[in-house]
Image 1 (cartoon, rainbow, N blue to C red):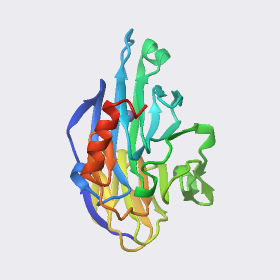
Image 2 (cartoon, rainbow, N blue to C red):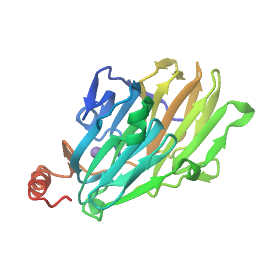
Image 3 (tube, protein in one colour):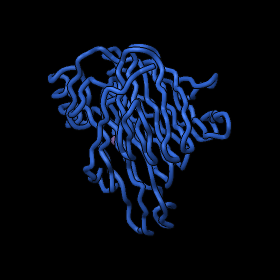
Amino acid sequence: MKTLAFIHRNDTRFAVGDFSPVLSVFSHYELGNTISPFLLLDHIGPGHLAPLSTKKGVDEHPHRGFETVTIVYKGEVEHKDSKGGGGIIRGGDVQWMTAAAGITHREFFSEEFRKQGGDFEMIQLWVNLPARDKLSAPHYQSLTSEQIPVVELPDDMGSVRVIAGQFDGESGPAKTHTRINILDVRMKAGQSTVFPTEAGDTAIVYLLSGQLQFDTENMDAAGMAVMGNQNADIEVKTLADSRFLVLSGEPINEPFFGRGPFIMNTFEEILEAFEDFKNGKLG
Ligand code: MN
């Protein structure tokens, strides 16, 4: 079984565009390649939107060299990109956007949702691409909640949605460039479950709500447990009813350089990305 390496926690809330509050759970600026291939995790909300007549979200911006994965729990996000991809991501849905060579997009609350108002909660995860795929063609996977298998845990202790990779014989619908597991878990208090990962894999657990225990350490909501990369499998124990993400996968053992919306391998490639964006080559 993997052991806990450390608990990472940020308490600073900020706004992304005018989505707020957003908790920056971690970014590559803090953790570098420590939890490769994962680069960044933002927790948007939970919050409540009062009915609004104007657009709210993030206006047109570029990405290159990686993938953005948006998991919507509550509320609705409308997405439109320069390659013609787009649609409405509703509660339970996941959008997997491979920016690769470059894309520009907008992310707003859907018109219907902002007119009605309501509760919202979302996650955005950034996943790195290996150098060989960084300049491949961009694409977009819309994973609706009906496509995401749900595994019921024994003794009515909770459930696991398999977004990517495998759990208990079920496969997630996401097509990934490297081996990745993304499990969206709910578990009642006082339970324990083992999530399989391979030895050498990165493995992290982000707690949206509740309380977990790793070895002798307790972790409160908004904490992220980073497991050591030796040994296989992660054991998660719940001290309260909990909702959490288990992210694991094979690390990409390549240096990277990231600035703003671009994640490449070298500083020169970042300058090139800014130049290409300025010249309208990213969308
Ligand atoms: Mn974006």
